[in-house]
Image (tube, rainbow, N blue to C red; front, top):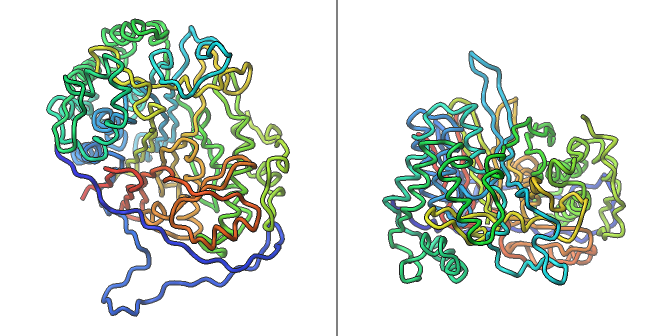
Length: 583
């Protein structure tokens, strides 16, 4: 299967802001807005927004990998549902996007299945993130100085028990309509026959080649026999991974966690100093629960529960709901200031989100409107919060009992939002010899050097993550299916995407392409992607923000469902993404 590099550039629009004055916290006079009208350039057809989504009538798949998207669309054309397509995309991306797509990593999935004659509508969240091996100790990754050196290359000792295969198996077992093996067959074919390497993937592998070359299993799978890298335009084949996928196709999750392949993986890990055992593999389970529910301006949203970070997105949007962002206008200084302030408060409250089962996150409280109503009092329009200005919040009174994302929606009203990862690009840069399976470095994400904290390392603990796939509903039907990679940029990226479509009525492609900001804690800088006006940067500094430029943030892969049309938007911030509809 051949595919080319998508060349659409990320376009940025910026609005100039008026001079600032001190304003009340919750009420402000709306600035005059320039609204688009018919053009004066003589065009017969005029469009109100620069970017347009891809349109499908029988479903849509959007992913960061062109060939994987095509696999997912083909499954829909064969009569498969959204879950079938999602499973096929996940396995295909393990082949065509090896720096993030995986079977040696883990992730999260939100699923909506429309009502049928046999059952009511169902919404589930599948947490298939990695768990720490039983031999994990608080000192495992600490150096002689008692500190964790994040600059050191990861290895087999940094690997958590992978969850991807179990996550796909759980979703398919509940809702799949096509045979399991049929969904993995396209990935096997891509691995065995090969595909033409794009510039983006060739460059990504070349950038990690020196580290990959240090591990025999990674070297044999991802570099040429002489140790050189595959170049763009060359056919890249992965026969070892094809054989591993064939075993999973035949034996399902049991093969990966208890069978011959499990033994091969564990032997390879232990031979190179890792601590995962067959017992760790056999004990792995995915958590299947209800989503965390909240809303934004009347639109219900199904969020991924902890250990993912859906509650952080919910909290930020609940804070912003107290302000009229639409009246302020997209890109206004007031609007950017408010998003920054909301993210500061949300970042402070993230101290309560941790790994399970050792830590019980107050998810319902963090996502509640009542908690946001208390925390929003910290926000003022005329000044920027600092860390010292943000007292610890208490959500417990409101409590009831490289990464990649893809989105799928089908003609039957079903939808899947899935984000999965190896943590670092190419994970730990290691693969058990003979398997072709790149493994994660999830254990790096623990708070090493701590004990009894939300994200302290512990045996069997499922790690916390900033990942947050979601589905936004309108009239009880999926309206926006979205998610993003991006590590620390994920939460702010999702907040802005939702605000762009709800507050500013942008189409899903335009919403994805507008420049973004990111804000960490109160004393962290306000980061701005390219595309904002220098005047906006100056006015933000005058309000007390420490502003600095940033590289790109996230890579949303989104679907909006409007009537009988599926509108897909592949974020061009990362190469090779593709939105493709079923006609």
